[in-house]
Length: 320
Image (cartoon, rainbow, N blue to C red; front, side, top):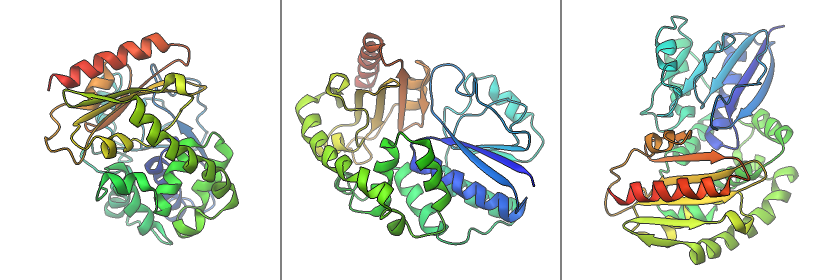
């Protein structure tokens, strides 16, 4: 029996969907008896794979940065900041194995993977993967009909997104990934281990709407708010666009036990289009993302540094 380890973008609907889809593909088309393990990874300064253990069999990385680790056998990503440092791109382009794929124009990594695996390896997702692919594409590309839809969280997929963003337990994320594709998202959302912690999260979400409304200020098309001292580790990134529909960009600061985070985004419904590449701005500070959304993380005690970065990014966005 072979082994497969899947690294994926942690606390992310698209990342976990990609992990589940790849495991299904591997069992269908490569090794039906493979023992599969999953490990979430987060963007951070330096090498996010430092200290990670690759298994002696196949190792895949999905919806996350490229690595030149010799154990990596499969890779799929769509982040504009996939190659940090830049020299990794040459390593990727020199690879002739035919199992590493990249498309920064893809709206979601899950759909990019599904289409690539079908075209290259005749893979056909079964079960309930069609709905999962559909929602991963909507969520990761912010293709909601309105900011209100993204904030109201009425859809099971959006409730699962909220649970994932706040879930601190890798074992539960692993359990969730293994259920994806086997049951409808609405059924998965009814699991007690999701529904019970989700209830206070939804209550907190409503409080965050009020808090961001109090903390945020808008100037030169940029909404800026600092929640570092408010014990808010994660918040719905679409709240500012519902509260400030004319904004072009947002810069939000938050903190949890592991990091201070500077979240940067562009308003999909703004009356004036985006002119900045947010991923390239975040890369200046060791972060990454997409042209439309990105983030930078520093240590949980590096509050002054986080605020300096937030102020610099705010000033940069205000110029365009």
